[in-house]
Amino acid sequence: MPTCFMLLQVIATSFVSSQESHAEQFVLFDVMFDYTKQDAENSKPSKSHFYVKNDRLNPDRPTDWTSPIDYRNGTAHLRLEVIEKPAGSEPTRWSVCYIPNKGKRNGYGCLGTDMYRDSGVYEKDIPMTSFWENDSILWNEGIKQVDLVIKDDSGGKGHAHKRPDSEKFFPTKVRMTLIQVSAGSKYDPKQLPELAPKKSTSVQP
Image (cartoon, one colour):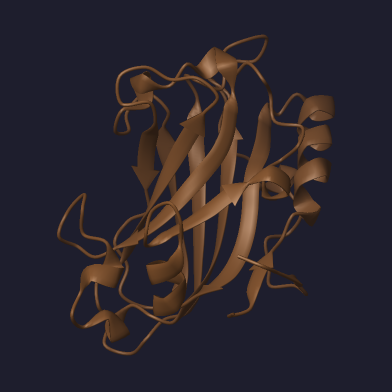
């Protein structure tokens, strides 16, 4: 099995800091991992997925994202650090899907990274009311899991493992961090520990 990493040291500190300083933001997850074609083919129940759940999610995330602090109508600050990527600059992106404890209609919602071609750091702020199927989540019931899905530039079902030239996508190594910011607040990087490369712990994917 390939080596897989996660970085969760910042989570508890970030959450406590945000509450004490009224910055009203918290790290939902911070993971760094290697991802191969074999990983994509063998991920279950869906291929090309990397699952962020259990101890990879902030254990102190709110149960209710609407009250007393309104994260549902805030923003998500998505930070993607592409550490390793195959040569060729093939356009790549990741979908980031919130899996709720309870949902309606579609039952989940997804935001996504911008398209990227090379290694580097990519950051963006995304309104929580703007991404695909965000209203299919009962935000007052909380989030139990986040699914990360590697894709090409062809659209919603463009899973990278389906490509005949999959060597343009795999293997790759990324670090992804998702910071939730409350309604009326702005992302403040000063409230977080430095998001820089650091020693990681090896875990099973």
